Image (cartoon, rainbow, N blue to C red; front, top):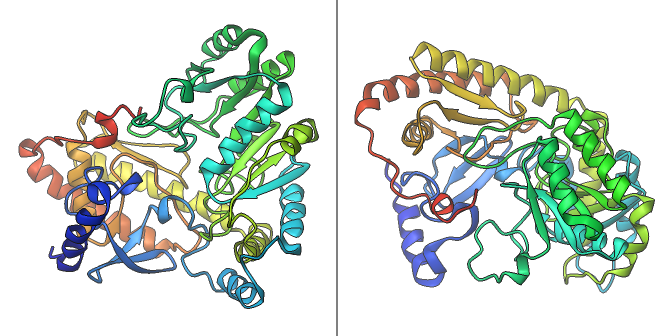
Length: 423
């Protein structure tokens, strides 16, 4: 597949951007034939810089919930642009959005807004420490909570003190959790929890109800705060905080990615218990009061309330995962589809260096389907049953190609995140 424009952009980027690319699209994290640059998007599809169209099962790594360029959401954004966006202070929309989010999320009595998930999780950390006047947090090994010095998965450029006062436990392991809390002693400020185990490179797992309840109990017993980091899963697991599915309410929850369908805004929501701590911290940003993303978020929440988007995502996700598993088995492969169907991860059995996975997703890409070999994916409400049929048809052909080539696949020599110790 020829990608002359993408190739030229990579060459130009290498001269002016360290490494040529950074973050989750950094060079080496995806197969070499994957595009680095894109030109446009609509609904459930994206086009690369050379004009090739793909069904996008990454959904911009989550922000696309209702479809790229969703008309009602974007119209609300554009209307507000005409009135004012980045102003000296916020508009009324900030108050309205806080009201709407606290109505939607059962544990929330207040809201604060920022720009990305790392902003929100760092605010949650600061709030917990300010509220409790303690330093130590407990969080699960391998859980991703952002890219600030305290939590970045690749510690280059950070110091030991940046990452101090943290104790790690195993997700869904009550004994490990209890041991970590005991180690923190009287200094425990918060228990950080992912909505489900969505670590990269390994099978995902739903939260065990006993584990979630024990997190709540231990926070209450010690006077610490329970934080659920819902940046990735918020509004794809439930219309409430994701741990509502196991009947547990946190004190703080962090939100981002899709709450404005891709427009830049994130949020920290909290209960009355944490209000004083939140009011005492100093956090801000030049663009945190932007009104247009808040208008987009209000319209997104309206669609969350009034449509069956979530039920459709769950249904399509279940059908897709079952169909891929069946087709892989028919081709002689074990394919594990883990996590919620609307946020799935697909990994092959007996594939420790991901050579099967890299080959398979490259084959799918050549057939117009954009998958990821080691990160969870996302479905959006703009996808249709016909799109799911197209993925399954492409998978049949891609699995047949994998079967022909399986014995001679070259190893994946370098995964920057894996080599750098992300997990």
